[in-house]
Image (cartoon, each protein chain N blue to C red):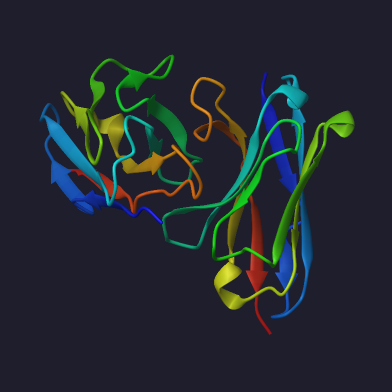
Length: 107
Length: 120
């Protein structure tokens, strides 16, 4: 099975900073990658699908890129409301594996 | 408004069984794939199972294969997860999640979850 590895597992940044999270697949998955945001005590929300397509209603400071095995989620200017854990997920075929998550905090 | 509401969680003994249900509303349930995703306390998300809109395609995570059974009743707008031979490591919040039509396999709506605790 394909493994999904996220890095870092946690980060702390200042408001306004550019933040980048990486997700690596152990085998190529084309662009079948989604990103989710889970705020503390809340259910996850879909941010990005197709590696780079923003879900409706998601702020434009979020962006995704990558294809094959290496993907990134970027927050161009970190806001206090972005404090959350972010997960990638492969969906090219089963199992629909999630990455281990990246916890983003404000410094 | 899209809603998915889970029920059926609770305390079970190791080796025991539970049946989770998910009631869907606000969308044409029969047109969407559905998933179960779980999250152990303080841990990350773990995909559990997928069922296509017509039940023709079903997938399971290796960790639950042979023990859990996903099913749906489109006439009742309901999704189910029969969990047998429960283990301590199955303890988690179980989310019912709607498949995202633009990206089959991703999910776009999640319920609030139901807690399953497996302990003697």
